[in-house]
Image (cartoon, rainbow, N blue to C red):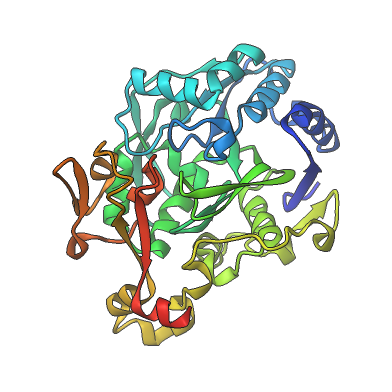
Amino acid sequence: MGTHQVYVMPCADYGQTEAALRNTLERMGGMERFVKPGERILLKVNLLRPAPPESAVCTHPAVAAAVAALVREAGGTPVIADSPGGALQKESVLRHLYEKTGMARAAAQSGAELSFDTSARLVSLPRGRALRQAEVIAPAAEADGVFDLCKMKTHVLMGMTGAVKNSFGIIPGLSKVGFHGSHPDRQDFADVVLDLTEFLAPRLSIMDGVLAMEGEGPGASGTPRRVGLLLASESPLALDAAAAELMGLPRASNPLLLAAQRRGLTPNRAEDVELVGGSWDRLRIPDYRFPANVRRDLMEFLGPLAGPAKGLCKALLSQTPRIAPERCVGCGICRKACPGRAITLEGGRARIHPGSCIRCYCCHELCPQKAVALKRGLLGRLLN
């Protein structure tokens, strides 16, 4: 079986998840191909922040429970883990995260372990382009194998978040802020994420698209959309290439696939992916809504002309975060998550200082109150 196959499973609701995954895994050769008895398998879910399953912010607990049950049947020990953004890596934080997202219930139902290990390990990334080493959460460094359980979502910085972007979650808590600060350009950040994905080397990637997210994702400002699909592949890149094609994401607005192409990593195009379980035309999702800046991002098309005036072009084309004071409750999550130290709390409300903003959109991504609005740059408004 080629590693560039992506299996697509219709799944109208989460009650059908285990049956759909069981059937597909049998077609892929059985869970025994991916798990050996006695192995500890990290189920790397996407738990961006403590959000309920119906918000579509996180991997649905039904997906984690179904995969965990299949891992246990194969003789492995499934371990559910992630590190949320904008928070310290503490046991109390993880406990709240697992409860709010439904992962505690999923573990109880399936017999999976919930990881409360808050330590980190320094690992080597010898083939890294952006990173040669990184501190990652201990469960990622110590697992015998990794399953990437990602969510189908839009993303204001990266266009979409899927299997590859899910790897960034192995960076502990607030340490993520430093990577956004040191790699503010989204193409540079794409190399960081690809380096982490190559380190993780997931044996199996499964995308939760039953209840997906469109619009201004990946956080509370995004809009849940019932798509009714699960996708699975041995290749996280193949999974993302297929999902991007089904969603209709323009290639120029998919920096992860563009970075993979520059590095000679395959597949990085839908043309190189075999879709198993349906045709592209039948499964494409109509009118999928992307962040407002996606279809107006012309940086890739400017080519060499963008080099001398890259900063100016970015300012004109990018969206700039602004605080909506009527929504802000002064929780300070955005301030903690800001790598540019551009946010202060004044009078019980957040304030963004535009001159220090690097447009990483961490504040927008993590604000639970939808209090961070994105304002288009001048050229973006003209193009609109």
